[in-house]
Image 1 (cartoon, protein in one colour):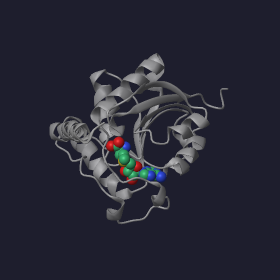
Image 2 (cartoon, protein in one colour):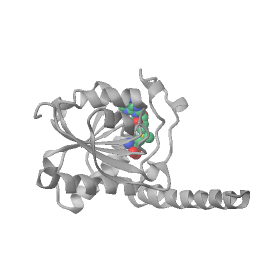
Image 3 (cartoon, rainbow, N blue to C red):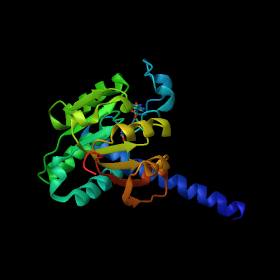
Length: 226
Ligand SMILES: C[S@@+](CC[C@H](N)C(=O)[O-])C[C@H]1O[C@@H](n2cnc3c(N)ncnc32)[C@H](O)[C@@H]1O
């Protein structure tokens, strides 16, 4: 590729990203009257969770990735979809839970919807966003994702991850989820190799022009039913 072609490609990708940001983030907030788009870097955290070094900063998922994950989980689970509890692991300001609840309501479906984050200040924003849009308190757990007793929540889980942490925590999470039947939606799947090594099978995937627009959906049966 010559330098002029290279420059054109960068410019084209840059425009695509600006447009994607508008369509995938700004519109959601504008439509719902909330702020999930403002990023929170780890330097801005006023408390220091133990695994902060393994975690990523806060930024919100693209709306179409949440919709893709919802559609894929619904198709895969069929009539047992409502038996599963949905958890956004590393939920930040609750965009994913809000969008998921809206998708459930649109289809007349009922499901338990939870969020987990290790940074408590984000959970304050999460609940006020949730209240504002859905008119009720959301269910949020303040904990490290690798230390939650998942089977005590439910043995049937749909877990959503927007690349919240590195492979070390993902591997621990994967072990913590072993007793559960899991559909796992992994957006920006930077450490996908960890899941494949721990027996998750790919259900479907959606490649994108940008890592934020790339999602892989996995499933793994509970080790209690094998
Ligand atoms: C990229 S943001 C994703 C936010 C949200 N899921 C979304 O898609 O809009 C990652 C989030 O994971 C949280 N996080 C990172 N490591 C964590 C851990 N070990 N346990 C719980 N939350 C964690 C961060 O605080 C941050 O809010």
